Length: 166
Length: 423
Image (cartoon, rainbow over all chains, first blue to last red; front, side, top):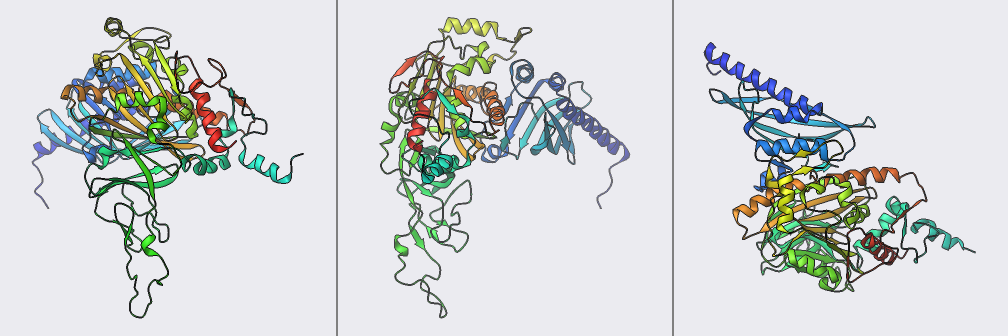
């Protein structure tokens, strides 16, 4: 067995993990409540969001399903969905798998997890919409903690339309 | 009096008992829900005298490259052989029906079936059969079995500026003749410059595949369903544009943007229309398209019946391959491209403007939505029919007709479908 870290080191690592877990929980919850403004507000002034099919990631191809290279693009995605898109009401439900957190600097950490998102339609049926991975860079303790969020989805044949970000 | 035979034919393969060929303004909804018609379409449309898009030359750029694809529900594979020639083969082993190619793409000098290791050249010819001559007292294949004449069936194949098509119809016209009056719009975009694949997006739509053609041959809906359009000067129904349909079910819809000054106005306002209040886009990049063709065409959509929609929308270039999965289900496979010589800046524009289209696209997502709810609304076995009479009830083909409030291209599509289906 590896030597356990010192108490101070362990405390820091656990605290970082706690902050990341809370942020990830809030992230999924905002989307599940359809609160796109809250979702957008989690992104730092310098940040990006990309939603990419696994196929393109593996082939090294740059096209994304949603590509928001700056905070402004993230805000525009939220605005467009809220005010310019026509779609049937539905709910998401995010489930996250085991989370891996790595501190990269004093106030930064990377976060990786698997996810599943289920979608419930107005008729009350729930279907699996998407599974894949999230890979984020977080600013620990910041009000807007997401510096980068990359969501890579395995379910490359998207069922129907994908309105909200994942 | 209808004989028993005639009655069988009517109920099994006809969408309606009273749909005269002279009625080009109505379509019975059963055409979208009848399973027997869907199965007949495989034979009469997809394996008929139609050209079907299977992929891009850029997807099989090196000798030995292969790409899995399909024509209707028939699996095919596109290959490039050692001499650089393209082949489209039915992807089925001549032995007992297994698929020879199971991966999406790859490179090999031989295509080998997993079941009994029968192997084929990239041109589909059978090259190897294990134990052909027998072994250990087993006699192998009898000499009268003509293994030498067997192979993966090759289809008549033509490429147009990087787009590869194949047909089961040996009597079909040439690809260029098939594309007819829409050809010039297609070759304006796919103009012979080498293409580069930027990526793929896929979606499954719970609707009949023909609803997608109705939707993309319909400029009438564009500014009404897609609220996003009205902001960006990308598309307004009052803009100058024309619709050109052919007798082969192909159509091109083209919309001209305003002058640079008009676009600057729209850009500066940056409003999204909504019923309540005005909203603004924070990032200008989405609106910031380049006029790369020396003209002011913002939208050029080519619906190449029965398999693909190719397009230029602002600086996004794509092929949308339509894959029928069942009577009420199809897949759309979007292949995004640029030109090999694109500047880094133009390539970046293409990537960012891709937010407009695809399964989450600002101006595409409503199409998926409307088709899925529509399919459900017509699935009650009704004998109701639609009205397709915007702009008249006749069918104009082979010449561009000005004006974007039109359902002419839809009427032309149904005429072609009825000819092929003999209904």
